Image (tube, rainbow, N blue to C red):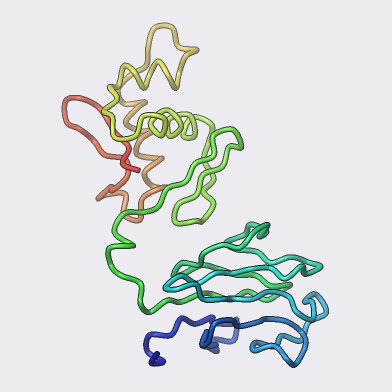
Length: 201
């Protein structure tokens, strides 16, 4: 494989480490392919391995853990272009030159309603309570057009007399600024003129 197509990890100094071969180990020991001398890093801390076209990050039982986009790794995870990997106190960024444009057209939305967690392209997003309620309502009805009346009843149950259109429009606008790469050209939370809104997941 040419270096042009080789996935890389970029360290905080800007140096790129090519992920060649089937497995690249990261750790404090000199035997590792990527050596990081820090007391917070285990001798063999983590590894990046290839499974066909996929690139997998795995923690090797390290003391301080391996973090992917701010979340501690509890099992092997597939890496995607732009992912942030923290090993001890050192953060790497994963770059995949082979990533196709199609993979990045639609932002990837993940929602764990019971845990109150929202991620866009695997990055945690902080939402206000009403923003979360609106997203949860639409998320539970993917691709379905929800009218303003339905949204008002679901998000503001405490308002017996209903809510004004501008309240819903303002809430949708605020949610878009947190979910969409370009809130002026939404890709996830769409307006269906004369009918309401729908979420594309």
